[in-house]
Image 1 (cartoon, rainbow, N blue to C red):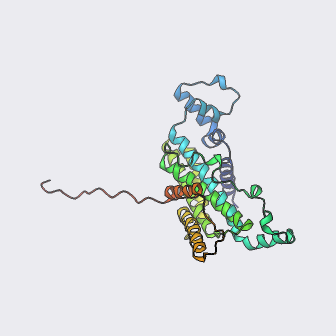
Image 2 (image 1 turned 120 degrees about the vertical axis):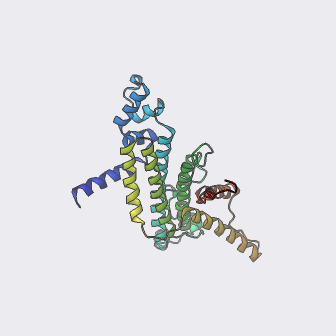
Image 3 (image 1 turned 30 degrees about the horizontal axis):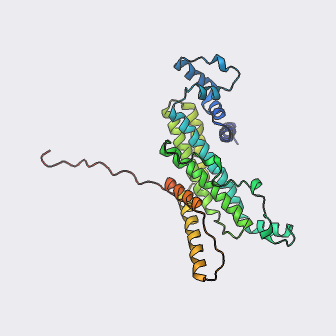
Length: 289
């Protein structure tokens, strides 16, 4: 690997790793302390009383960042989270049968309904009603952020589903959806990069753009189903299972989505479904014009 390529890979890795931190820490690394200090000067603010605190945290407290800058960083954060969750779900899906066999042998015949084959916490499961998702789809947020965070949450549900398919009588969704989430994540990074550029953070935009190109290259040429297709499949799968149980008329239990969970999936489906572009303006000459 050439020196420039190696340095670029290191920088991309650093950019991605910081996306798991708090927003103030992301600001310090992505926007950069020197750039934030410029913003302090432009705003005529000299935060001596915050001496010793991270520059990014001071930027948030003194409100020197534009809403667009915050949106861009939150979009990139959601993109990175979605990408990593998709990778993990993909691994579980690809190794589904071997994982089930391994844990069954390890449990030496203990009925699987009496225990979890794989520990959900260590496997990365986060419930759909966890407080971490409370702002997903907030009416105050720009559409870009709504879509990015909805895709992150959908990727978490994908991972949850794959873990459940190992532990319970729940069908695996398969690994084919992972590339769709990865491609969407690359697109969100691109949008975030462009927005940072418009906000005047050229270097920061270049950092995110480099990540976007790297992630997109990994799935280039793959006809992957998009996140909304995953959600649609999950909803239809549940409906089909309920219908099949009714047709049996055996009085047994059947899988039914809790109303709150179904409403959540429907909300995410709406937020992640691509919207058609607005119709082009009619520029033809009008009579008498």
